[in-house]
Length: 268
Image (cartoon, rainbow, N blue to C red; front, side, top):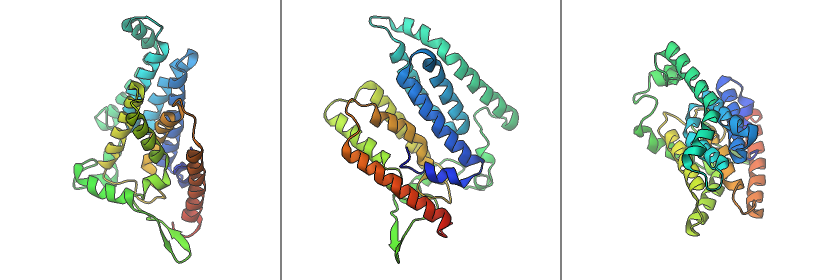
């Protein structure tokens, strides 16, 4: 996961960026727990995802992925679905209590169990269309497709609202290619389809957001989906391929270069 904007986010400081880094870690642990889906990990995976939601609320969109993986991991050959659900239910008690605690806190503080405080930020208090609107989609798409350019002898990046997300976070491109390959070969199973559908919905929710994160290197909001996209790419039957490894190695170098230039080279 080093070949992504997480490196840059880790250097920003501030509670929002710390929360995003924590959400990344917790979502990775949730994915690992879902992959194992045995013993203590079958309890820990859903708990990690519930904690990730407290850091980045949109991570809740992966609840169906984790629940489906848990159900598949616990199901015994020939067992009825209800019997599997009965054994899975205790694993969901702690995450449900965590969600209730979030809701109670939000209701006490903001009067709405689903309000995490974002609408009270100055940017959104004065936004014409509120925090989320289809009116933001066209500009957000333009922003995250902008390419870096060479100016003099230096590579320059757009400094606000992100730039080419598939360059800064190429795991998106690798996952899209894997998805297309699986679809063409009719090798897309239910778990893969659900995971990709949730990741696509996550991406679309960001397009509805008032901005793509303001001052930044890369497209930092979009790192939130990378733990699940990494799980999709790495858990396939085929191993990680040579050209995919080269792309990710290039991405590591690009993000190190861009982060150093952004923070130390006068771009900030």
